[in-house]
Length: 149
Image 1: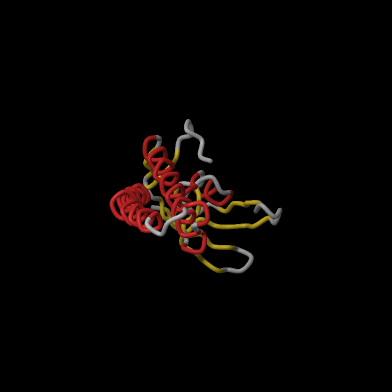
Image 2: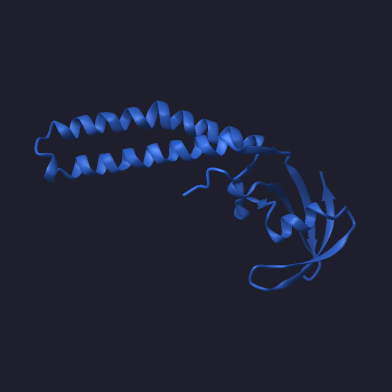
């Protein structure tokens, strides 16, 4: 469950994605699930109607997600996207990442949380700096910040 008093850090893109999802949930998904419930009710005995039970569960999930998104948007702090390029000195490989808020993070898409060890480190260093981070698994990595915008 989401904390109603927490501040959620989002990029403008992340905010827009949530607004789009909220709009779809309210205008498309809600309507479709109401139709599914109506159709299931017409099948007769609700106590043994699996379609009805499933539709009601889906409706509850939709309503919970709507409340969750509304809360996030209400308590959102908009971040500027920071793009960084880092060189892993042990492998000599360079990677470019976007530093985003925690709920937008997707390491496989190159989006790193500002609360992650790498996110915190690059935000506190300048281009040309060499620094160490310790991963959550305890591995120590040596990096160089190559670009930051």
